Length: 207
Image (cartoon, rainbow, N blue to C red; front, side, top):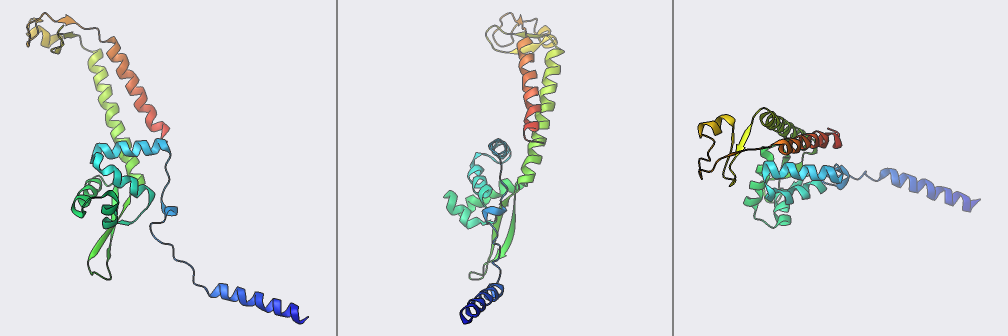
């Protein structure tokens, strides 16, 4: 009986000790807080970043996709650039609202340090806008090709619509060769394929 009581007392003490232990704080920047993307989404993200902020910002985005709230000094060390260069790249991303920051005061040094994160929602909003612009541009090109007759220089100097070619008496203004009427059927077909692909891209990403 004494042995059973002793075991019971130990179990009660363990439970009490477990209750007394403070809960571990959730640290900002853990990978569990990071949104995960498919390979197709990652490709779309990098395409947007290249277009609006440049190729040099890609290494920073790769880092921020893996972890949130990273100090600008840690980022500089990771991409092997000085702090001013790193800040300029971060500002280029921030200009399009692809990244955001929080400011914390360093308890030892006394100055403020910025901690940066990537905005996964904003990047797809931007992707959709860019895609819509490309759709409209492609549609306007198709309308122009369908609604005009074009003439091209046999030496590939220049391509003009009917009115422009008529103003030059159907002679190339650069080399003087007689311009030939162009069959733009394949060009129109190619543009229509591009338009269809642009429409599919957003659907594949669920946008």
